[in-house]
Image 1: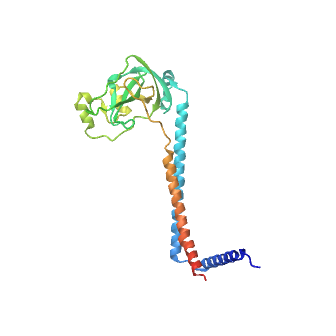
Image 2: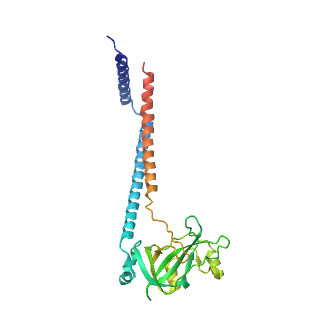
Image 3: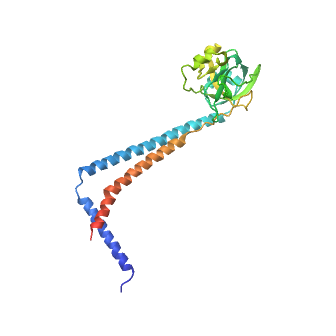
Amino acid sequence: MNTSAEPKLTKIAKNAIATMNFIGTIISLPRSRAFAWVTLAMLVGVAVTVRLGFWQLSRADQKQAQHDAIVAQQAAPVLPTNALLAEPALFSQIHRRVQLQGRWLSEHTVYLDNRPMQGRAGFSVVTPLALNDHTIVLVQRGWIPRNSQDRLQLAPIETPTGVVLLQGRLAPSPSSVLSLGGAEADASADSRTSKIRQNLNSDQMAALVGIRISATVLQTDAASDGLLRQWPEIASGIDKNLAYAFQWFALAAVQLMLYFWFQFITPYRHVRRSTP
């Protein structure tokens, strides 16, 4: 007695026979030189893209480790002034929180140009702070906006006299920006802009004050003295590396799929269509 399952079983059997015939054909056919070159190119391409993907993952791991170290430094106990003066090597612990007591050297205040904050153009205000007669740190005190009518006119800020107490964290030297050839000349030619700079390093400031700069500090107190201190948070930056790694792995997968499609699946479909 025939059942409804017999046509399905017959179709499955035919498909199995066609598949076995195709496999036999693929195995028995001599491979052309073009096939060998295509296979070699696929293997090389997949190997390279996979390697690049793992390299991006390793870069992400390195950045994450660096970020974790920064977070650990920021979470460490605050270093007071007396500890820093007693052990100057502590000044090298970048991103460590500090509490400083000293006197502003306001006559050496510098305004670093082209330092945007939250999409607004402005200046980063840098003033040396003398902890004692022999120790000076460079403090990035905060930010002021640029005058939209006259870029050489500086917004007023307050610099307290006498002993001040501030919170901050040890930081790298202020980042450098593209310096135009005439910027410094323009600054020196006008008394109003004599303190505007494109870039500044500790050696330049040491030449101004006559004492070597021990460290750079980013002040983190609440906004005061006419200055904003909404410094950007330090991010790990691993998202970009993870995205690149995904792209490389996806490219490797695409190469494999195209290889098997054109070298095996397309011939298989052709064999099936030609099989009576």
